[in-house]
Amino acid sequence: MPMTRRDALTLAAAAPLAFAKSSPASTVAIARARAYDGSIYDTLKKLTDQCGGLAGIVKNKTVAVKLNLTGNPARFPVKPGLPYRNDPSTVMAMCQLMAHAGAKRIRLIESFFPAKQDMDLWARYGLDIRAIENCGTKVEWENTNNLGYGKQYVRSKVPFGGYVFPAYDLNHSFTDCDAYVSMSKLKNHWIAGVTMTMKNNFGLTPCSLYGGDAGESGNEDPKQERPAIGHNGTKKPPTGVPQELKPESPRDPGYRVPRIVVDLCAIRPVDLSIVDGIDTIRGGEGEWNQGVEMIKPGVLIAGRNQVCVDTVCTAVMGYDPRATRGQGPFVRGDNTLLLAEEVGLGSADLSKIEIAGLALKDARVDFGPGPIGRKVLG
Image 1 (tube, rainbow, N blue to C red):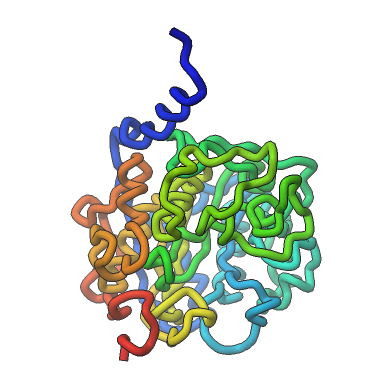
Image 2 (image 1 turned 90 degrees about the vertical axis):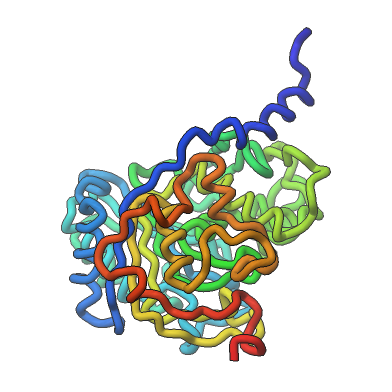
């Protein structure tokens, strides 16, 4: 009897359990760093050397670097204050390091509003455009919130079948590269509990297709973010874009967001993670979370496997990386680390991860009970 479409979808939905054959572990390096000064370059050099060196990742390659410039500036203007976005000094230092390691081209990418290719939009985040472009190799910039410089979207299938969607239509930059680097912050997330390397990949989805005003045909000038399609599932992606595997699944952001993150991390695994925990915030991911406050862990963290890096980061924040929903920091959502481990993306088991540099016990900082704001944090 021939397989029906329903049969195929059922198999795809079951695929995550069948796919999980192994959970690779790799070295994660931690370094003490107290300030955004000239020492950042040397600290990042040492960290990346402890992870196997940059040359093997970037030499003679086009390297896409996903930044974490979170928050729609139309609603949350870029201003001095809480350090929940990339610090310009770390971006500058990484570009110099990759250039010196032989990168052929560096493409800095992020999904932000307005969805335009305008260098002034990058400069508003404090990035020194001229200095970065003089780092020693060719530098490109692309806002991936729509087609950008591409002529069409790239359909990328989830290797294990997908938790929420079987495939995603993405800006070309995520596949038009030889290596992929994620630069993120060490902080809580209101829904996902924590946000470092893996949650940074949620920004792969262009709002032109996954934003609330994408409509049935897509919208190359989106004004709305992703909650309707991504977080809540109250709207569908445009016609022709891959639709949900299980429309009957929970319309709960705490269920959906971690699973979409894992889908996207499977599509575009991170080749090198850099997590900035020098200065950051706790209690949430940005100033829109009431009660967030600044914290100074004084660390930089790096590694080759996205799950292992975020596992160590979660432990540095004082949490159990294997905690389940309802336990800090996963107070509103399922544990992304365990969902990723289940489909073989990496190990969330600290006992299997080698930590280089600063010892975990010396790096730990109390981030409080999780993303619940200052009232309980004290």
